[in-house]
Image 1: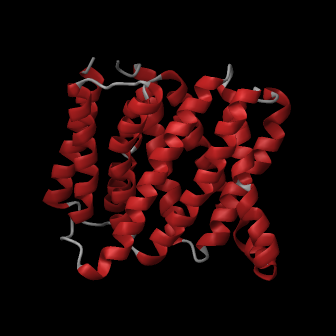
Image 2: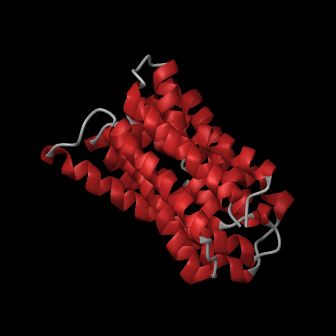
Length: 283
């Protein structure tokens, strides 16, 4: 089962947007408050959209609540990754380890069984993404903590991807699920910021609310597109294609930050593109 061409373009757009807002968080001075503004933007926009989508069906709520919890744990681990490791190190591991896990979870929980050809394509995408991690050499023993945190983040990514895939299919309208998830996600970080970082929150918002709001809009666009695709196509295919965000991050670093692309990154890019092509031609 292949993805329709319009879904491929939507997921690639989501991957590019995702790489962009993650680079924004990594470069920000206070990552926690930046995260808070980003995700509370989703809450605010979700509240505005609620009258147009209504309430999700009762059978959808367990997935929504579970997804909200997993997403917020994922955000905590992502912040820990960025505290202890470089973007170019932890991002590829976290994103690259998730497609294979999604394929396994989707098989056992949703009965989605990718063909051997599709599994090989998923493997190529993951191998290419993870190989970006060693583009500047193998990590040292001192870098073990960021790797462990990134792998845990990958498990969380695969978990919320499958939960959201199942939740979307449990209801009749994907838009209710998308809007309510965006609305719920930002609440825990906002409550923590108000109760524990109140003195710093006001000055931060006065100085940096615009970049945070832009990042929030990028986040909504990115995962909204992914959720829509999850409702239309096989989870393993969507996950593997989405993680090409790592390749976009490498390109952004090369073009905008003037980082060297290098032979290893070129080989990684070939692996990723080959895997994506194989996924699309697999049946």
